Amino acid sequence: MHNKDKALRDSVEDFLNDPKPATFADLVNAANIVLDDANSPWEDASKYGDHFSEIRVDIELAMDSIPKEAIDSISGCIGYALKQTIAGESLSEPTSIDETPFFISLEFFYDSTKTQRDDPDFIEAFEQAKAMVIEGTPVRKTDRAGEGTKGTRLVDGLGAVAKSVKFFVR
Image 1 (tube, rainbow, N blue to C red):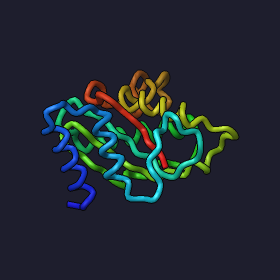
Image 2 (cartoon, helix red, strand yellow; image 1 turned 120 degrees about the horizontal axis):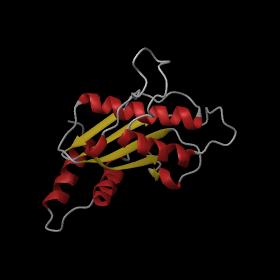
Image 3 (cartoon, rainbow, N blue to C red; image 1 turned 90 degrees about the vertical axis):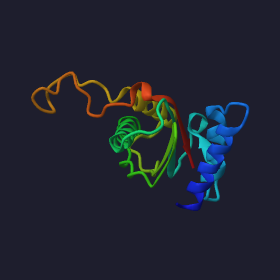
Image 4 (cartoon, one colour; image 1 turned 45 degrees about the vertical axis):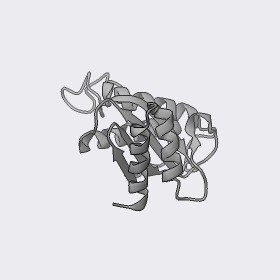
């Protein structure tokens, strides 16, 4: 186990064993401290309108863990939202996956300077990504992707399993 993995697990255990119940914000703050092994801090993506090179998504889960396929769905939904909104490069595979009971944090490389838009709306991109992580990509309106694909989604979301989704960038 990596040191930061152990430190995160210890922090989460401390919060869970504390007599006052931990909130999702407490867990996010602990993750910010433990996971920040670079020089720059993670910034809340909902308030950040500038360029960035890394993305982290923290998800509070309604169950103690999720299957590997769900991690692929999370990545797919985020990548779809960024491509649709910002029209930039493709999202990397997760560079870090930290999972504890009822919580998962994924990190990705993403160069936001490589966009085809003159004035990319990063805040809107993360709002759409948040919705897609929960609901999935938009429902297809035609069979262009193949026979029987009308009414389906390219990527399914987590649904009720995702209690809270928060994005950070740096």
